[in-house]
Amino acid sequence: MLYVCQICSKRFEDVQQLKKHSLIHTKNKHLCQMCFKSFKTRRQLIAHSVTHKTKTEAPFACQVCSKQYPTEKQLQKHFRTHTDMVTHKCQECDKVFANRANLRKHMGYHTRHHVLQRLW
Image 1 (spheres, one colour):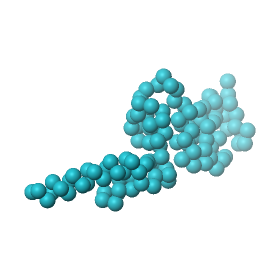
Image 2 (cartoon, helix red, strand yellow):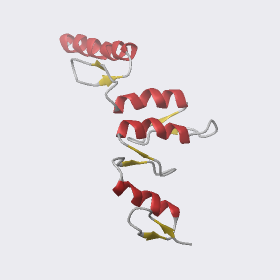
Image 3 (tube, one colour):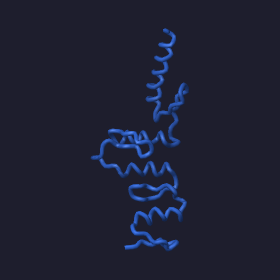
Image 4 (cartoon, one colour):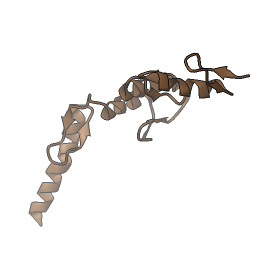
């Protein structure tokens, strides 16, 4: 069976190829590799990708950097580090954190590191 693009009449052997091709006719340039739905922004694609995870799949892997998490909630929290939602940045080393508590915990490393340097 052939699938035909309704805009330019190009023909494809499978529907996935047609869906991927259809991006050239739209402003949505970010394509989900799981369902071939397209999005205007990378951020929308990242948020959408979580919908393909089921409760039985573990660990949950980030589609951007491949980091893995034991729960969907932790993965969603991690996704914010790939978007402009991150607002907690370490002034010492520029690492970014999804929440203030993680930044405070991280700052303890710098405090311990400075104390050890003074002891030497």
